[in-house]
Length: 636
Image 1 (spheres, rainbow, N blue to C red):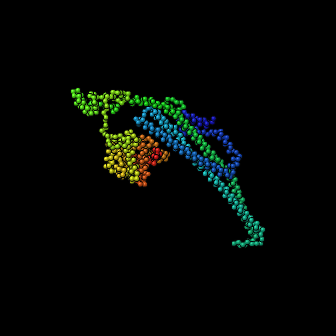
Image 2: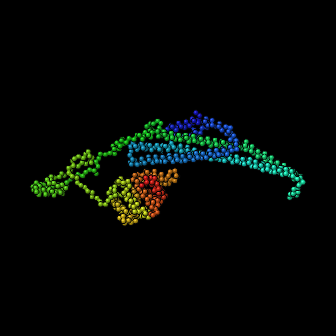
Image 3: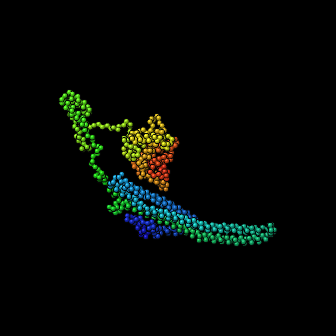
């Protein structure tokens, strides 16, 4: 095993040890980038010494082939770098969000402990959630290593690309010089041969023939002498240029091309080797990340201080949890509200009964009549003589069927509620319960539905009569009517039925505006916004973050899922209702944007006014309306 393999094995062994850290990026780079080359690569290097390869590298097409090959390597390096960069960003966001949601869940369990059960499940759940925070410490060095890798790959591709351009330009310049020299030699050759052809024609022609020029006439001998001088000059120029082009061609073939081929070959092997090493480092980091994560979740040597995540989950004991809860919270005290009323005869009636009994002993006929009258007065008549009723009737002070016996002696008094009303109450609503300013969870707990009755009533009225009403939710209703209706509803929830027109055949626009204003007033009067104070900032941050790493709809879906049941289902009804309003925007002039501006301050109001957040509040409602079908199951 060579030193490089030992380095990789050492890095792997450190990754499997839970007591060691992932190590710095520099140490990992040094461990993977050992100068020793594996034997397999050394044996492959001899392939480039093959005579056929040498012949190809000496050919005229060698430069074009190598330039194309190097360009492919650079393109591959760029793609490798882009992949590593995207994965680095993705992993960074993954581990950051993982730690954030883990911390948020742990804080919620600690700060709102009274809302959750405190038992073995809660403790196990909190421990398991804490693993996500520890996974951040495992993934953080991995993200840093990926960041350094894509920077190195990008720098490598840029440097090699510049070197390729330099080699290509240098070779093209030398090639162009050689080509220009060959063209000049060819031109000189043509000139030389033209003079020779003219001399040949002159010698084979009539020697006595004269040639007339601007300078006068010339005999054949004079012409021959002049052409001979020109041929001599052209011959010298021809020889010089032929020598020059051969010299440049020899230099190109023997000096420049081999040097440029060698340079390109070196650049190809350099970038390919660098990418191979980076690929090995990438696999080593991935192995280390997976092993570190696995060891964190399931240690090799479990102990009581560091159990596995599976063991933590298996430690939940539901029966014991319920037993401990009942022993701590349970009580045997009696509920006074469930203690039956004892029947007691009023002293006045008791005295009359005793007197009538005495009369019956004296005058049987008149006593029987009197007894019948008294019996009718107290709800008990008999043809036989009446005996005096006991002063009190014994009742069991509890409803426990084990305790209640057969000691009841006499009929119970029928009690009728003095607050009975002839006004019909919406199904599931308890009477004598305030509506405005009461938390939604309280209203829902006292209702059979998952949405408060007033919300259901307002939505039903508006969707039945006001979908096409212009300016719905933007136009305010009469303040006096709204105030009177609010007082009536707070006095008796049965008056919720008064919301809407008095007659379906006589619907006034103001009746619908009143219903819309009542609905907004209900949400505005809640002790905390419908979207809750706890999630107030999370909703705003979701639309402020424009990094694009996660869609706004996805983030809002995650946040809305954390709402309590009451606000969660109420928000669902409201969103689908407002989308129905927006679907009629051509008539009612209320677009999603218009509705968002109106409802932003209603659903996300705050005691401290902040003008900067107003636009973001409207943006939250707008995005919730757009993502309603993603957050909730679409209505049929």
